[in-house]
Length: 493
Image 1 (cartoon, rainbow, N blue to C red):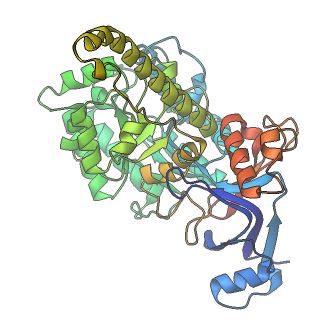
Image 2 (cartoon, one colour):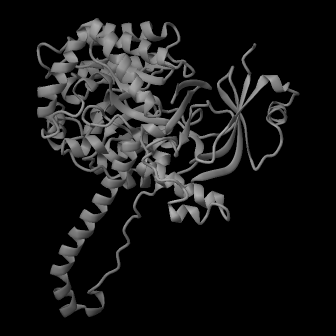
Image 3 (cartoon, rainbow, N blue to C red):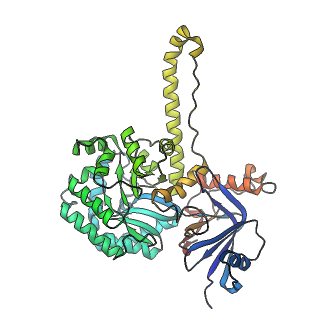
């Protein structure tokens, strides 16, 4: 019996086409061409048969035998896949360790030592399969991975991801200075091995955006890369039309170290920019301690920011101001930053992003309050009418905004927003079926959640908006029932 050519999902469909907009089709239908892996149509409140819908979407009659209907239950919804814009595959080997250390000490004690072990290809073969399966199980359909300096291990990582069916950028880490003797390379080795990795993964199609797994230029960060290495990597990015990823302004000590390595550059950002590594296909992780020059250069060049709140809390790096990036028109997505972050889950990243945002709001409010106390008496004595000036604080990130950062925002950061991130016709079908009623679900059912129950019959869209908010703040991998990438099912409960 032949496989159906088309899938039609029927039930609740949720996505965030723009920041802050939660689009809910409570009784929707979405069609997928399994050959192309793309969405062929989306409709709301449809009663037509699935075959008739597909026929209308593609403009020609389709036999019902070519169409498979996927009926979602009353507790399931379809949403875009989660996008992890920054993670380190080899660092799963020490997940959850060293979070009492600041960044630079943590790198010395754990990161370099454990990453160096991936010169052993047998380790890479056995370990990466387990790590990638865990990432997929958490609903991540697209990820930007850092590997190690080893070409063979990185090729194994790329093959493992491809075999798992996940979409990914994979980077060979480059570090030719200020690195331990047991885990370093010369400038020439770094550049040659990077180009070798590009050819091995992509052959002659390095710039092909449609490929499932693609290389990404990956200087570890400024302190471990010479000017020659950075410039060489910039040239490779241009030659092969590849994206770039690195770290920026994560920790105060790291920022000072980077600037000391390049004292003639105006800012940390300017070091990457002068090497030709900045552009709309560049992903910079963290961006916690950004001065105005950094912000402006990132904005001008269209660089995307990977916000990694779990790692920033865990290594005491600081709190990135996501609203500041948004206000400046800078693309922002979420990253887990395993193993600086201890959870390989973008659901966790959404919750941590909310916590970081609220902590920043509270800290600034309290600082203003203390400052105001010292000024009130003086103001009251000299200008009574000015004693209590109004102040409007930026609103906390809400569930719709967090979902956007985890999906469409991540796609923007990865330079793939025209192909991914929302459930619109023509886009690749990278998606999740979420089930809020699995056994032992961390999300309470709709009947016992009174705020949801009262909307179930009168306003199903409002009820689903509340359920989506519960998904953001309560769900975990148990609720990821199915994972699709490019129209193919790659994981199911």
